[in-house]
Image (cartoon, rainbow, N blue to C red; front, side):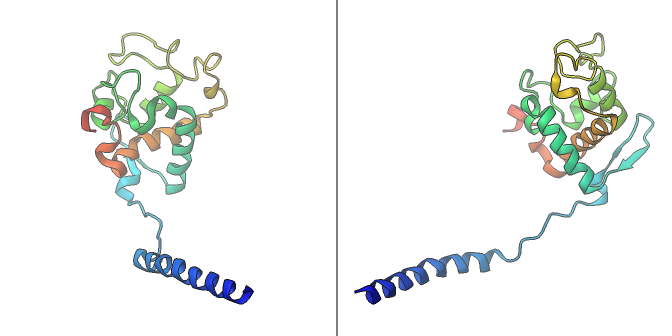
Length: 169
């Protein structure tokens, strides 16, 4: 009886492993995505100077962004105002334009309204308001630079899915 049970288990295992082996074979080897230099190069400042981030820097920036900003800006949208996302067009139309690393770092230090008329540091997380928004307390200038790099490269990698929010999906 024990040998027939063992035989039945082996048969069942073969039946289950065959489809799994086929799926793995069809999928082929898994390779990591390789980002191009063009995708990793973004404006550094308003004068048009560019900076090229490494994949590791972008991954680090994404991690910091997700833990510090992702609660309200997941996928590059702004949950509190779907009209203002983190897509390149919206960042470029802000006053001052926020479409480069230096401008985004400046914003994360001391945010202003979209038209640039007044500070919104009392309601938007920033270094200036880190006494209230504790997630900002331990961020260095390099952390802010990495987040800015991620924000600017994300639309190049994700396309319209970054910052589109309700407009596209």
